[in-house]
Structures are given as structure tokens and as C-alpha cells.
Length: 82
Image (cartoon, rainbow, N blue to C red; front, top):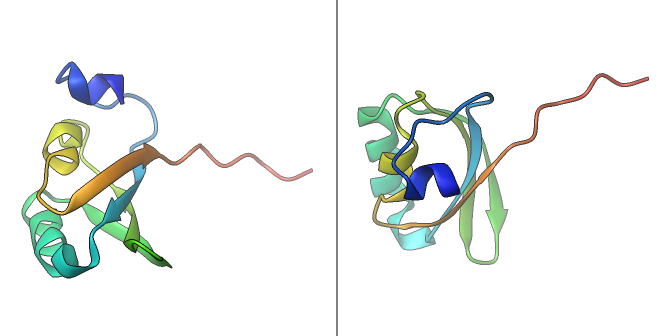
């Protein structure tokens, strides 16, 4: 995410998927609370939990740099069904 590297706030949709190492999931969840990150759901993967979250616009760098987070990707906006 170029915006995180450039230390710029997230624009548009603020939902992310955040991959977390399993043994640090509890610590990451506590950090989410401190950062006002809302957990919308959790999926399991072979590498640890994947949180779907909504973040404040200025929290991208903080979330991406949390110990235990190994990847972050945007959730594409949902499209109306036809």
C-alpha cells in the first residue's frame, strides 16, 4: 500500500483485510481497540486469522506497522447485484 509507505491517510473505503500471525492475534486485537479500529469479521487461514476491519482515515500506518501484522489489503467496495 503506497499510501502507508508515504505516510498518507487512507482515501475512499476504509475497510481492510489484515493478516495476523496466530500467536499475536490477541495483542493485535487489543491494539485495534486503542486505535479505534472496528473488527467486522474474522476468517481463518493457514497462517493465522484474517481480520476484516474498518479503520479511521489516519490509522493506516499504525495498523500496518503493528507487531504481528504480516499483510494488509483494501477491501474493494461492494457493487450492487443485478
